[in-house]
Image (cartoon, rainbow, N blue to C red; front, top):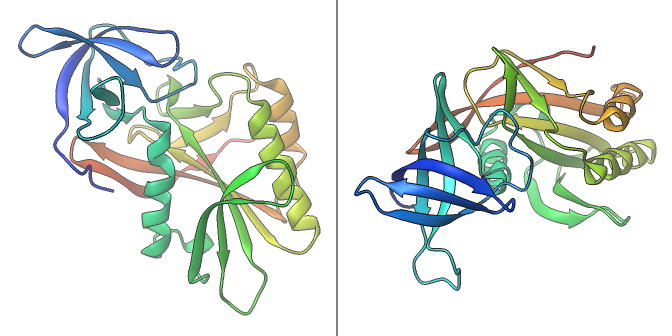
Length: 234
């Protein structure tokens, strides 16, 4: 997924009220931008780091810029959680996720029949349809290790329950953790942050709900799904 327009460099001063951040532009001016990440951004949002912003034109947004990337010592990190689904959609269309290949029809953000809403419904082959939920991962508290969530996620638990229910009814089901950073070799659920979610995932029948983790190549030009990571289960 390429960014539709060149990103604008800036330096992070502070992030606050979840959806706001103050940035210093290269000309020295200070602006407030939309922080497109509702999580705690633990291990990120480091004051003084170089960031990259997208500029909005012709929209009703009150803030002119949105925060897209943060540069860490090990490379760029995609902080915009809304970018995860377009990256995965592009990868699915290209057949870049072998575990999810074979369904030619892809619908995005569709009801699962319960109160939750899942990200993808894949259909069109001779077998059962496949339901897919995507989680955007940014946190890296230890070198080489990506973790999710960075805050408790009751919504994530509901999605996991919905996938298990669909799988029990005969559908295919998958959960994909998309790591929006290139510097990790493994992924695990942060059980110290959300013990309930970690316990729910640990007891999920992985023969029925496929659990995947893929990292990304991230740059000011765009974000591209890259390769699978090892999932640690303890």
